[in-house]
Length: 120
Image (cartoon, rainbow, N blue to C red; front, top):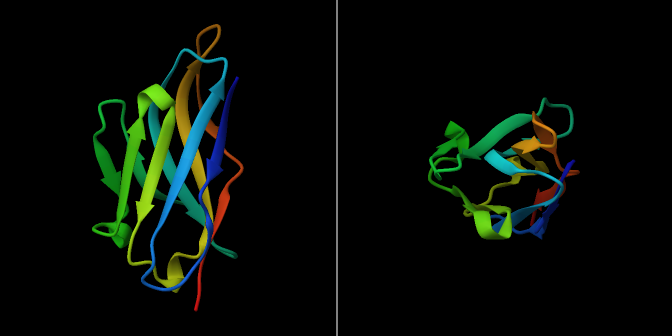
């Protein structure tokens, strides 16, 4: 089983910055792509950013230029650097990892989420 724990969320003022972290643990062979999603109250969960094993990245149009996803494979951790934050990005941010677990099971795993609130 693969567990994901997010951290780094909190309350930040507009135009501020936050960096979210997502660390994987448990019994797994490897992690392929990692993702950040978010879900605001009353809305569906949406993809924010993705990063492959080779560190190719992809972003939702609404965050391009302001958010940066990265990963440290040795630390089994993905990051989401968020700059120039606006109130509309307020949401619960989830980490997702596509991993390979024993005996040979590929699956998308989710963390519990970390709250990001942008408000003055």
